[in-house]
Amino acid sequence: MHYVYMIKNENNDLYIGITQNPNNRLQAHNTNNGANFTKDNGIFCIVFLEEYPTLQEARQREVQLKKWRRSKKDFLVERYSQGLTTKQAN
Image (cartoon, rainbow, N blue to C red; front, side, top):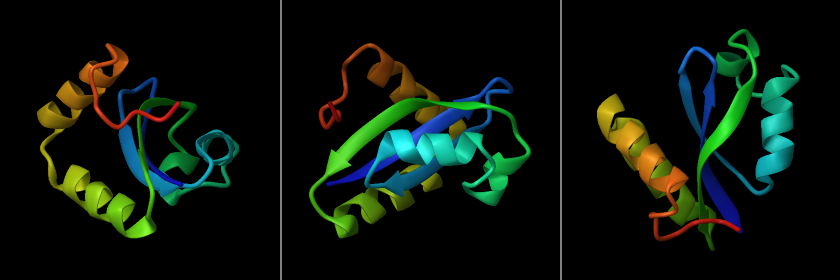
């Protein structure tokens, strides 16, 4: 399985990515072994997670989310925190 995730830090910065292991990827981001964006931006936590059976489907969703304006991303994160998204990972 592949996961599309959003992580957020204490400054409210969002990062969107893909992984096969969300917990390991989050640890990598928080120990400066992740993306360049997250290296100097503090500690992140997962605020959104969707599961996809193929990398292609996950990439399509990642690209879609990255094109969205911030307010739409924030709305999706809020719905996720309330348990209202349809493709949640367990």
